[in-house]
Image (cartoon, rainbow, N blue to C red):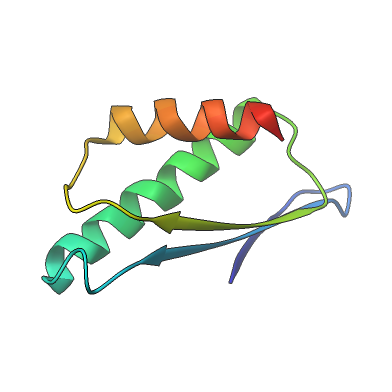
Length: 80
């Protein structure tokens, strides 16, 4: 569980899960996790996602680019 905390005591908790079944190589799983973490940090700096906890589960067999991850996560966080 990772959390982002700003000066006003509002925090945003999230966890990133990438299945070993779908992405068998650890190198690729770690790459996806790093991309998702950076995308969440970028989206949180642009929007005000505070006092919430989220679990992000990557359920695909393909490694997608950083731009696609940002696009998907931003549309997902808009629905929250």
